[in-house]
Length: 113
Length: 109
Image (cartoon, rainbow over all chains, first blue to last red; front, side, top):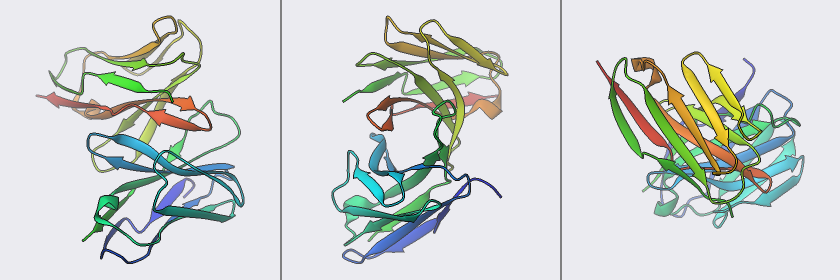
């Protein structure tokens, strides 16, 4: 199906371990984004990409890194997971026109114990 | 940076009633997006407003943009259980959308 998929959908990991979340889109969208959603904070931007190998930091980028080697894939890595990174992570993408906003993935629920 | 404040934070309405959700920006709005999120799922794009005074409707949902007030409103007419969820407004701040914290809507029988 066309759209955007995130994997895994759920993950439990231990403090201090590295974790990589994957976002895959079939829309050939240039722009991709990673957000985290937490109660009381809403959606906050972690990192975004404006093209292959072109990425930049968002509002809450500390402790996270990203990579984009292909148009369709945008990876989010937690180098050493902490309990404060327990959250729901959403990936989004959009094409050149902003008229239709973003296409969102279904989210990854990450628990760091 | 631009902040978006949504009100109310949560809303419980009886099926068939009308309701309004507001989104107020700390800066001038050049475009405003409305999304809906069902519990435990991703966000679904509802509509985008670009110009002051613009009004758009989709089924029983109408959104308006008041540039002077730096505010947008989302109005649902004759609410149904299918309208339940979290409604979020978003606006561009730099290269990415910045979102309000959302309004949680529950529709009771």
